[in-house]
Image (cartoon, rainbow, N blue to C red):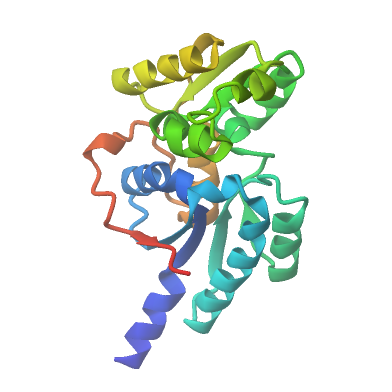
Amino acid sequence: NLSKAADKLTEIRKVIACGALAREILAVAETNNLDHIDLTCLPAIWHVYPDKIAPALRAKIAEARAEGIYRIFIAYAECGTKGEVDRICEEEGIERIAGPHCYAFYTGVEKFLAECSEEITAFYLTDLIARQFEAFVIEPLKLDKHPELISMVFGNYEKIVYLAQTEDPELQAKAKWAADFLGLAYEYRFTGYGDLTPAIVDALGSSRLKPQFDASPQQLDLTRLFRPYAA
């Protein structure tokens, strides 16, 4: 009936996220029994085109409001939007993940910011970027067609640092291959989900939930809550 439908809408927490976080958010949701999350993802490749992020966030927030969903969380960091994500959050009265980018919140924002000043020559990878290195790095920069650009673009870098969310030997090998492709040294660091888990649970979980950190994304049904972005 209408009353039950209204109650269900008040229970739903809409998460509007970067597609780069889909696997990780679903892992956190499943491990912490957050089955009331409605996840909508924008294309992960938009990190290469950050001007597209803010307008799409506004559109998705408006859609959620129109559906009667008011508990919304933005699973983006600042992500090169020049303050636009923060402006949207302030205008709409909603929250986002703290930090400048996913490298920071996976590591732990305070830890990353304390260390990054010592690593200005590091190029960071996450699970997603390692998995799709060609789509995120090689193809947009046309490095496959113009290998001479590698030294121009990456000449000031000294190493790739793979910040791993999962302990996956195939991804480790792929990240090492990426370092070799760019002619850089390679370093592996396991971060897990870092600040992402408490951010999702604190924003969207009940006060009774205690964050769990032992999710196994490889065993999840990644389509259960994932609704891909449609232009």
